[in-house]
Image (tube, one colour):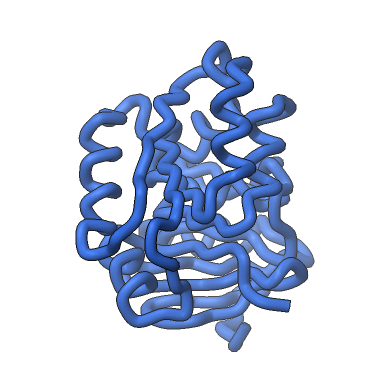
Length: 205
């Protein structure tokens, strides 16, 4: 089974994923950007920065300005997600993304996206176990993908606390150059700065 979901630590890692593989886009591919998680930091800026990653590719890019639950009721948005060749979830608040996408057609569409890339912190929201960035405690995620809990690195104290609180769940911390992929069953490390820990022991994924 091929990889259909990617989580990257930064926009630079997204560029690397597009330029060096394994994600390949056909000419005229339909790319949809979802800046929901950036609602508090600036959806326009997040959209422009994410769109710029595709400047060297002959693709069609559209941003869906879904920033709150009211917007998720528009069936057009869900249809665009389902029919797109690639869906990119912008970096930002995993908590806000979870609140907006939970239990509605728009969230279901993200779950069914043929190829999905989550950038930065938002990657945590799509997993069954989400890491609350406010203190590092595990929380219930959206469950779009299973097999591990994803997060971006935080302070040593907070990472230690997170690992202590997780039980029977592998934690994947994705640094700025990190890229991981999910093949429909499990996550695997593809490139860059990624630390995998069941408990406090570093292992290979």
